[in-house]
Image (cartoon, rainbow over all chains, first blue to last red; front, side):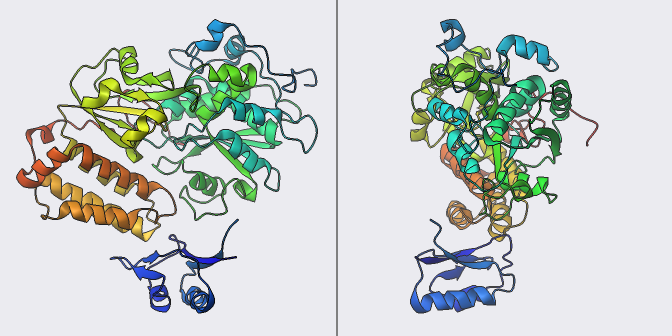
Amino acid sequence: MSHRVRVNPIMCEAHGMCAELLPERITLDEWGYPMIDSEPLSGTLLDHARRAAQACPTFALLVERERP
Amino acid sequence: MSNAPSLMAAEPALPEPDVAASLPRLLTGIPGHGAMSLDEHLSIHGLAPSARPRRRREESPLIARIERAGLRGRGGASFPTARKLRAVASSRGRPVVVVNAAEGEPASLKDRTLTHSLPHLVLDGGELAAQALGAEELIVCVCESALASAESVEAAIAERPRQRGAAQVRLVVVPDHYVAGQESALVNYLNGGSAKPTFTPPMPFEQGVRRRPTLINNAETLAHIALIARHGSQWFRRLGTAPQPGSTLVTLSGPVPHPGVYEIEHGCSLSSLLGAAGGTTAGVSAVLLGGYAGTWIDGELLRGLTLSDEHLAPHGAAVGAGVVLLLSEAACPVAETARVAQWLAGQSTRQCGPCVNGLDALAGTVKEIAGGVAQANATQRIARLAALVRRRGACGHPDGTVNFILSALETFAPAFADHARHGPCDACMHPAELPLGVSAPGAPRERGRVR
């Protein structure tokens, strides 16, 4: 069962915390919105992803279990 | 009701050949003005058989019939209709059925035409889908500017006898907006929110109107269901191509004597459609298929074009919701693209950052090229912005707009290069051709009262 990060673009207000906490998967575009690499996450990276999701001020970052 | 003809019987023997293989089907007997009455509708098409499942928890036989017919959605995405019905049927809860005639595409008139002139065909389809799914509620969504359609649907609902156990039918007038007819936006609006897309999942088929599984079908798709239920899947397949069976409605506009809504069979030539419209009255520089999320095809290729997805795929185009828009040679494709791009950027519901910023930046860059004041790397900038915008919105609007701009840049490459170097051309002064908002060429004039 794999996990991926996804952003809710409606909630996102480009605070940019996620790119700081998960640079392995998230970079920011020229306006400061996250660009997500949706490769599966595991181990420490998954922990970092969860921390980044919790740190998002608008709860726009989601760590999702693969939908069947 | 118990003596209504049942779909459980084997499919009816093929009807008489002249009924079967000829056009029009949906548009049979379409009145010149006003709506077809229930009596006229029944005298042309007869009663629709019931689509209720034979037993509780069993699938309605109508769904398998629609699957055999190979019907795909006519709202633009061409999703297999039977699969959508099954997705709703297998979700938990009593479903709601929504007829989507919230036609926000400026160059498309087919849904407002259907709901205006043939409301009973659309309501038949909606009721059949509701019966098949056991839905208690059927909601018909029409856009605000289509006042005549709203009035027709309202009158038609009142005209129909209410059967015991049938779904409650109501009309909802949806704000005029390019993306208001997008599924999640409709659900959001019907749930008391604004007509703006939401973040999915849950998809409407899982959790839609009042959190119930919700079937949202284009008005034309349901009109086809009304006829498939009556005549069967083999009848439906007697027109069209094997991968894309049946007839479809197209909205033809541009320099033709008779622009408007036509019913064609998939796989017919563009030339035959143009012939039906009286030919062209001016040179055509290109044709836009699929509306403002669609694809331009160079005028040189028009003669050989066939209106089926199979044949259009090599051009990166599809029949979609049936927009066929001809641009005359008198118009400047660069100025037209700049104008439409700006309009599309303005149609963003301004919810998602990449769409808000990206579409404005794209439209701005196209405008600079049109004015001859763009930087040397403007085309690369557009390609980069396109990549930044794609797949990053909650809905498909940013992707559609990117498609439209990139397709114009490719099809009209020499004209764009010329404007970038020398600025506006003489044709830039030509009156605007591509329709914006709801007043498309040939559109029935509807003004005044807004509900």
